[in-house]
Every structure is written in C-alpha cells, then in structure tokens.
Length: 603
Image 1: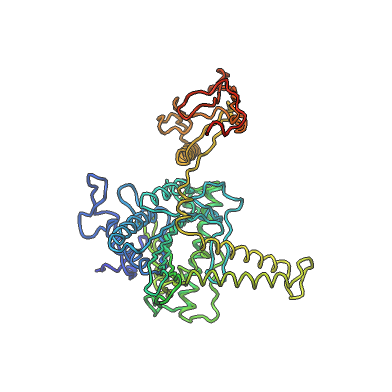
Image 2: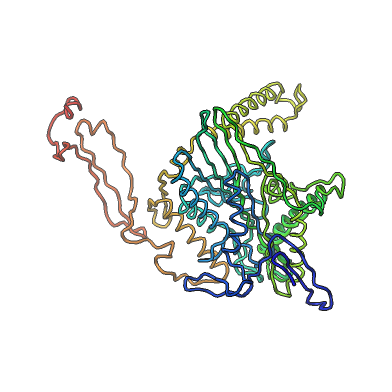
C-alpha cells in the first residue's frame, strides 16, 4: 500500500506489468473525494483529498517562513497541459492557490509584526512577467512591449535578470491583488483540444520583501528576501494538441524551453548524484556596528506552461507554433536538471549545464542550482490516455528531488554596495578610456564588442546605484501618483480623459472581447457595464484646450475663447464660450478699472 509520500502508476496497455512507484516529500490526491460548499470552496469529504489549504500548509508556509528568515525562495509547478498547475499556483474563484495565499499571509504577518515592533519597516514590491515564444513580456507595464521582448542580461555577481522589468511597490494585500489581476488579464491564453484555457506562456511572479530594523551599534539592518513563483506553460505533444500555424510555433517554443529545463535538471542530477538527498544551506549572520546592512532574498513563484502532444491538443496555426516553443523550453529545463544531477553526483566529468539554451532556464538558474530554497510541484493527470506524459513527469520530478541548492541569508551593506559599484564604474571607465574605440582592437586588446559590453555594464551599474539610493517612500509615492490617460476617438475626433484604472479596465475588456471573437464567439451584445466601447452620457469629455496668458489677466484683460462641441458621430452641435474674468477674493468682478500695477490688486 502506498503512503503519503508515494505515487504509483500502472501502464493501461500492459496490465500485467508491475506498478511503478515514486517517492517524494509529499504526494497528493485531488481528482475526487471533495464537495463544494455554499461559498464555492472544494472541501474534502475524506482524508484522501488534498484541498488548497492542505497544499499551502505543506508547501506555501515553508516558502513564507524562509522568506522571513532572509532566504531566496522559488516554487514552480511542472506538468502537462490541463493537469492542474495553474490551479495549484493561482487557484480558481474561492479556491485560492499558493500565489494569492502567500501574498495574503505575507501582509497578515507584516501587520502582526508592526503591532509588536514599531521600529521595523517592511517593504514589498512585485514584478510579473511571462516568457512567450522565448520573448519576455512585462505583465505590469502600461508601455507597449518592445519588439523582440525585454532583454535578458547576465550580471557577473547576481546572475541572469530581465532588463527594465517593472518592480511595483505595494503597501497592502489589496494592492498586490490588484496588480496580479492586471497581470493575469494580460497573460497569453488560448484554447487547444487538451485545455480550453491553456496558458501559452511561462508566468513568473517575483516578490521582493525587505525588513529594515535599527541596529544597536547605529544604522539599520535590512533583511531582504525575493520570492519567485513560476507557472510553467503546459507541455503538449503536437499531434495530440491539434496544433498548426501559429499554435504550432508556440508549441515548439514551449516544448523547447521545457526540454532545456529537463536537460538542466538532468545535468544537475548527474553532477550531484542520486544518493545525495535534501538541501544543504549556509547561513550568514548580520554584521554589527554602524552603516546600513541589507539581508536580501527573493521569492520566485513560477507557473510553467503545460506540455502536451500536439496531436492530442488539437493545435493549429499560432497554437501549434506556441506548443512547439513551450515543449522546447520544458525540454531544456529537463536537460538542465539532468545535467545538474550528473554534475553533482560526479557521474560524468566536465558536465555542462545548458542554462543558456532557453530564456526560462537562464532566469531559473539560481532556483535550480544556486542561492535559493526551491520547491517543485509536479502536476499529474490520472487519465489512462495520459500515461506516457504522467510517467515522464514522475521521472522528471524524481531527478529534480535529488538536486542540491546552496541557500544563504542574503546580507549586503547598502552603503558598501554603492561604494563597490562606484569603484567598479571607475575601473570600467578606465578600461574603456585605455582602449581606442575607433579601431577594431585597442591598445589593451579590446574589441569593439568588448568596449560596448563595458559601456553597457557601466550603464547598468549606474542604474543600480540610482535604485539603491532612491528611498522606499520615493518609489511608493511615485507609484501612487495619479495617472490620467488621454483617449482619442478617431471616428469623431473627440478626446476623453480617463483615470489609469478606468483605462486599463477598458483595455482588458477589449482584449477579452477580441479573444472571444478570434475563438468564434461573435456575440458582441454584452451588458453596458462590460462593454468597453460604451460611454455613459455623463462622462467627462475633453472639448478642447485654451492658452491663458497670466500677464494679461494680471492687468484685468478679459479672456474669452470659443470651443466647438461634437456628438459621438462627429456632428457639430454648437459652440462653448469660455471666459476668464478677474475678480476679488470674495468673487466680485473687477470691471472698468484701470490697473497700472497688478500689485494694486493685492495691496
């Protein structure tokens, strides 16, 4: 009989074969054995069913506990399309997944600790992006995405990162929930035969958590953690997914990234060896004395796109291309894990970890073989038709469990970091100036490409210094600045001034309506409150603008201008006369008076 740590699988096409058993830290059953209560929450009717609370208690709390200690934490879900990765990570309606619960519990703990310790300051910021067809897209940015996506760079000390990725400061769970809703609505989702709402991209949520407290010797100590939550796109076999055209391209890229992930895990697995289990951690304690010391960590929550056989998924066109890319990225993930295993176990000498083979594995480098406490959820389908995919996922997880990471409490003095960046910039500047950029190779043997790389590093260091020197309150105040969007109706040439949230709601509504139209839903008759093109009669409309010269007003010269008014069809309805008339502080008009000096009016 299996225990709570074992998962067994039997080949439906070979009933005489023995059951294959796999042992993990936890094994959950969530296919049946539940009932929906009046609130819509799925609660267990027996001990077998694992609800969302059970999964969070076992996995999510550990992520949160380690983040509070100052460790980087990563959690990613892996499995084929439709197996329940996004349900585990994000959840559905009342059944919240790990990501929203981690965020909610984080702010609950902050509130509890604020009541006990008034001297500690807590700072939380969130980033959310997706990797779609090997291109990185910022899900929290209001700017149009650059052609080719955001660039992935590698820092000598900090590893791979996404250049110019938004990091939004948040001060409550409500704010972080709003940002995640905005990001979720921008995710790339499309239907395949295997999943009606298949995510076509890997989604990564990064939460930066800083704790600043006063030190006895003066200054402050900052304990910083980063949480990375990753929802991988579902891998799929293209023949099962029914993919063709763009869906085929997507599938190819998804599968390539997952394949690379597999190679990385395989390499780590071979490097570390099957016999070594668990994770070893080195902890660094806080420094005493003056100055500002930063203890830094990250939480990475990763929702991987699901793998799928293209013939089963019924993908075609764009969906098929997506599926291929998804499967490639997941394949790379597998190769990375295999390489890590072989390298750590010294099963092969000189094992190369193929992190660079996909964007996904580059950005997961720390989570897989570096400074992070990492949890992987392997989501399985109990259907007999998915036997091969399920067995593949189990083998993938079996390799991954043997990989060792080296998590440390991240402590770095802010003042020291700024000083070191300044010193590095001076060194880089000297290297650039010592070479001759105009010729192919300078006196120091630098090529033009090397000089350009030095200049880029110089710019990146300068950005990092500016970020470190900017106070948390400044970033929070910038985020709270009210933004208005000027919307132009090209049909009747009228303009509307919308608040940012109102505009984004309209934008998401248009995206949703267009997606439904692409998928065959031609019913445009939606309720007015959901129609992004409906404008209530009482809406504020920008009719025009007028230039006012203060010097003229100071000398009591009246200002008057006529602005045309158009209806929604562009028809001219009339004119609006706008006049500015000088008056006293009590509101009485000042007429017919000659003013030699405007100071007379305020004397």
